[in-house]
Image (cartoon, rainbow, N blue to C red; front, side, top):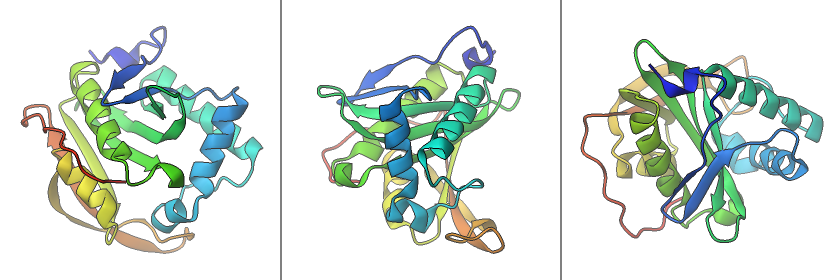
Length: 203
């Protein structure tokens, strides 16, 4: 049974690789501001088109509240990435679309502009993946990204997410809900070897 399916058990804080991952707080002004900055960043919008666009603090807070509900009902697990020593916010990582029967989830992440090039996404993905396999008991984690997003592709491969092919027309085109683009699918199984973290400059 997946531990996240019990709404009385909040998500834990995860520590490792110089990072602290903690659940987002929709009532925190700092968290709302960080979430808004992340989702309105031009580089994020180049590669991601949310179903509900976020343009202001009210929308960001409501988005975080929806995420908190998914955390509570066990269908998602959304974490704020922060530097372990300073507590400075660096980005986001989430395990989404958790399927308790198939023990499968979909990983997504983004990093704030000033935190890129420091291995944040790689370190966060390693940390969150380990927890998803050992804490949630998931068997398979999937990760997809728009074709051409080479930085995300490198992060996935460094974290042991093997490329499994191209899924056609799987995600929205940048800034549009009426057109689609292809995505690359990566996946990692609980039975795959644990990746070794190496010093590298990554997003």
